Image (tube, rainbow, N blue to C red; front, side, top):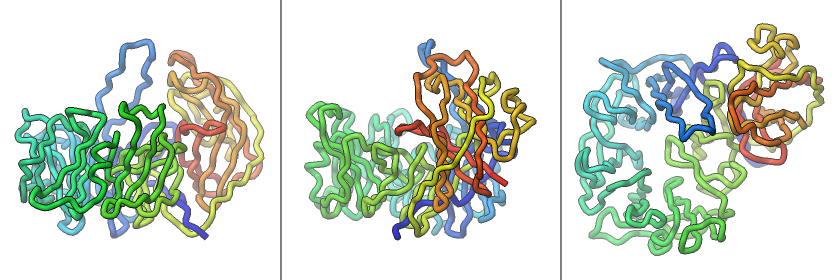
Length: 450
């Protein structure tokens, strides 16, 4: 049998399923089974009204924590002020965590000792982790030279500068392949085309893909010796057709060809290639991976481990196991329906008599699920639950609803349904709220039965 991805547990689950707590904005696994995470100190979220000219919210900042294999906090960053981190990279051989965030202590890149999380160094630059090094650049000359730099992660000291490679106005990390002497990044002069240059100009690029990469609309590293390439017409208009592939950099062979609607999602360790249905793809072989509901923190196919944020706080951990997916339908009946002012965002939880929503509080039960659409302008105005299925191998459950028109406003209450499952499986399950017939899930939640 082939491998599938199984829900293996939750990191930092919220104590109260009705409260938005333990919000994590990055998480990376360690070889000892522990984790490093960024947990938001004061989480908040807001619905944006479509009648405004744009909604501007302060981005969340995370506090760096190290967790043991059981998910307990064993170390925490400490300094004269919070570092305000938003992104992590881990280098386990030199025992260091590198975090990027807002500018504090005259820098936005900070190195921490992996064991104690003591601060080690600070610089005003970036870190693209490749081959045990930080490949750093600045996109604006206001902050210093924009030439590519190779830095030692623990001290952030410069090991080598590449003066012929300037990253002016770069809006996303470059794709670096040291073994092929290759760097690829979007050209600021022609934003819809790529630049492909040698790291060392005295040596040739060890890849047959150079001409093809320079003509591509989009090209981004998805693994060692693997690049995701999107090609289209001269205007890079996907509607006019084209092709998308994962290619082996060293040989140029196609690992997997996909529809032009395939794309990539950002992750802490590079990006993840996904097909048009948001199923992740193994960049090594092109095989199907887990079904995603949002961008993952990490999806390490070599180690068979992944981590994705849950909609109400906490992190869902996935692990690859031997088995096959098999969805089984669950019989259910609707026991309550209505609207709720207090539910602003999609929710799937066990119906509790202590709920802040009167519709839910009047219909509690251990086998009853609250399904709420939320008050976002893009949420469905009504909820019609069509089916509930579960997969014992992957420990996932899908609640499918008929997707009608979007609300278009945020003032009216959220649509709410309470359904009772005839014989729910026991234990903890990853539950996804998905539109019937396909589409991006409204959210993912962890529910415990029994």
